Amino acid sequence: MNSIYAELSRALQGAPTRRMGERLGVSESQAQSGIEVGQPLLLSALANNTRRRGGTSALARALDSKPDGSILEDLDGVADGRYDEDGSAILGHVLGADRGNMEGRVAQFAGLDKGTMAKLLVTLAPVILGWLGKMKKGGGGGGGLGDILRREDKGNRRGGGGLGDILGDVLSGSGPGQRQMPGCLGLLGGLLGGKR
Image 1 (tube, rainbow, N blue to C red):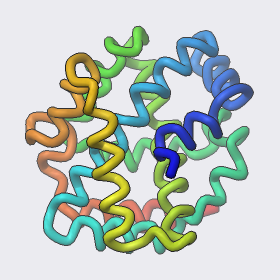
Image 2 (image 1 turned 180 degrees about the horizontal axis):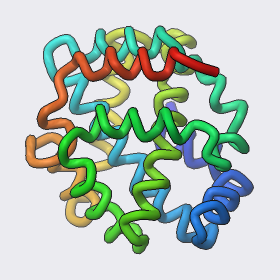
Image 3 (image 1 turned 120 degrees about the vertical axis):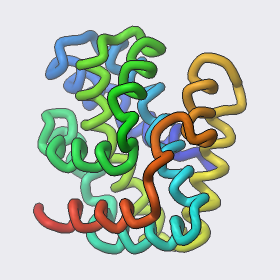
């Protein structure tokens, strides 16, 4: 089975990435660099939540509310910032109090300024939740989703150093998610279920 990272990268390559870059004032290759580090960060933060008691079931409930994958049919809208309000709220809940710190660290790794990286993460967050919603709708729900996220996270951190160190902080409690209890995932469901 292909990784979430590989599938999302394939979906976003080309025109969506180019349009994100244009909106953010960076080249397509710079936007791609941001996507390549932003996706693992957000997936690791979600994986960390599933390791907590009740976290996987909370994620499943959140995904039941709205993210059914329909956002993946509107990648032009994603690139143009149509879902950024949701994305900002998702980041606040998933990355928690260390959001600014993590944005700065992955920005440096990607070779982007912090403000641009922050906007790119906002754009990516609802896409990742939408992808997970599509997987759940297709039968990957419950404990299956938690297992998938944890395998994904393990693979993303395998290289060690650099980005691996940042992702390791997600798990150690010195990075995003250390204050996030499973209840935050229930809030995501409310955020993503409220409009469209």
